[in-house]
Image (cartoon, rainbow, N blue to C red; front, side):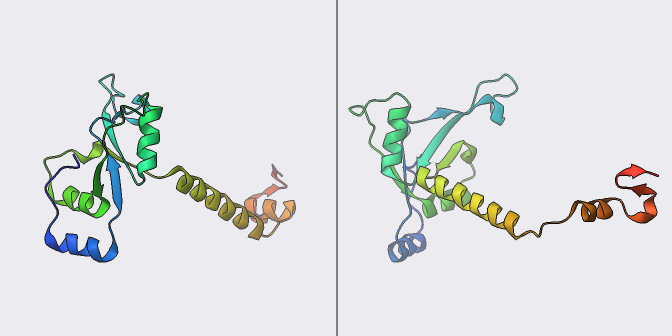
Length: 151
């Protein structure tokens, strides 16, 4: 997969100026999609997914977690995120749905922490309302309902 033809010269120049966003993967490291995520949910065979990692260390960790040994670690095929995006846009013969970009775990942890902080801030920013105010909004006086009960 990652050994596809090189991207056009303009993209290679952009990568030299801005720096590439490396991706690490191997044709030897694949996973089966869980049946509950749509792949194989109809009783068919589960789809094989090819993970691509932003860090070489995550590639190694996934290999070891899949039961591979350190001695048998395949050579990482290295590509670039921009090049992959270009291939996805230009090469329609390949089914790109089998590619999974795997974020580093510390990035996932940080994103979850920031989401939790944001939710807590939003909850604390909301003014506390009295029960009677909430009931008045839910059951306006002209509806014939008082305190949540019909008159």
